Image (cartoon, rainbow, N blue to C red; front, top):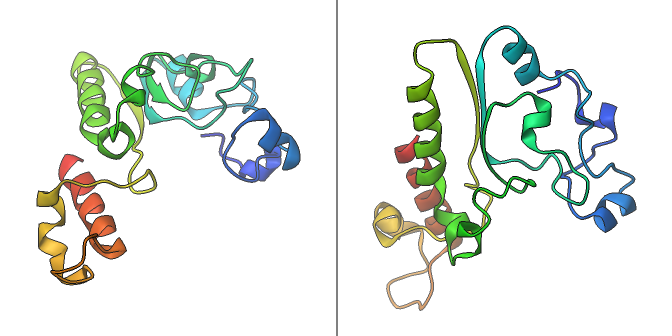
Length: 168
């Protein structure tokens, strides 16, 4: 969103806890004064949205996504509280793609008469994966076998990606 390599801002990995950020010599959040695509588009009259996994800072003092130029915000791993309660539910992280897509579509519908920009980040396929059985069914041949008490890694991954593809 800055048009620059993350390392230009001392970001060498995902922004995490202040302790982990300090060990990696990283800031706790991206400086909101940096030139950002969403802010430029907002200034040009676009409606802007950030929906899904944020990961640009969520600890103490981290700005909300609105500080970076977003009008509509529904994010995870940020200081935005909108999904905090839901995020505590079992399997939320593995199955929140439909919610992210629905919120994005709601934003698009509300802004379809004007230019808009939606930044959409799903948690798949790098969240803890827990696809539904029907998503894994086409990939049974990649599992460990019919008698195994668990699913295979490829079966789980492929099922999760298929779920993501279907939602988007």
